[in-house]
Amino acid sequence: MNKSLVIELVNLPEEGKNFQGELDPLLYDLPERDAQPVGPLYYDLTVQRFEDELLVRGFLSSPFKFTCVRDNQQFVQTISIEEFGQSYEIDDSSVNLTEALREEVLMAFPSYPRCDEADEPHECKIDDRYLAVDKDPEDGVDEAPQSKSDNRWDALDQLDQFKD
Image (cartoon, rainbow, N blue to C red; front, side):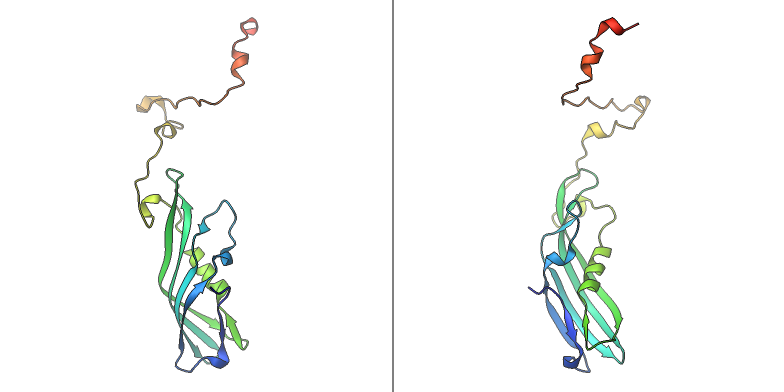
């Protein structure tokens, strides 16, 4: 597995060349609470030079672990770019495509990841108690249940001597 994809222009034939492989998922370097890669960035690209421009076309794919916005469950979804196409200015004897491919995949992230769109979709089950948080009881929604956790403020309610 490669850490980068560098195209050496001296070795690039005039008719272009096909590049296939995988890039190390560490290239994403995403914050811990963000989506995380669970596999490499797979690429199948055709690269061709036109004077001072490099045309790159092909396929990109990478699996990520997302957290569902509906039920807060984690799931795996593969981000695939079927028809990647980009051109790059040539100003050196080589072109490093790693950062450009990384950014292309990140731009294809879903705005609101949902587990029903996962590689192995499952139904999003929303906990009913969260539906009542901002609803008016007149809408027919039960009140949100109280948390079963320790409520230290209950002790103040027990003090009868301060009530009017």
